[in-house]
Length: 229
Image (cartoon, rainbow, N blue to C red; front, side, top):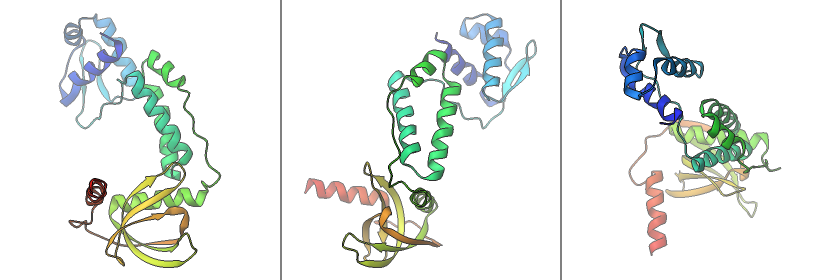
């Protein structure tokens, strides 16, 4: 059994507040108690909230989410590359979270997997158009979509025509250079997409309740139907 698999199994056996001795774990995993002592010490060092001591037993309180200890090589590439892209092209909070995620991923990976993560040669450079204001706007729209907060936007289209819209933000799309907001436009009573770099002003309104026919899922269904037609 790989050490990463063994660490995963130890966490699984300790879930639910059950007191388990090193000898019991060693028997289940077919290793020596000394190996269990070392593994538990490493898990505690990585932040897993295990309580207890050698000779008495170990337990882990309810509510702990297992850290990502097991990734394939391709999964590591995807995680690292994705985090780097968000760090370069995402919102301010997104970029900070991506940076922290890279640190945590590196901290919990086994040595061989950690080496693979460090060898990932997929990089992303921040675009000149990614200003601090745009990064903050991305975060604000994402937060509003997540918490169902209506937005009032001042928008300028490609021709320079200005308009004011009350919208229900549903999500964000990234097109490789441009971020767009998918929303329900209360003026048009239909789905609309607005480029974030053309939003001249944005204020928050009241909370809205998602309604049938006006959700992001409905938007995707409509797009799929139009492609088939």
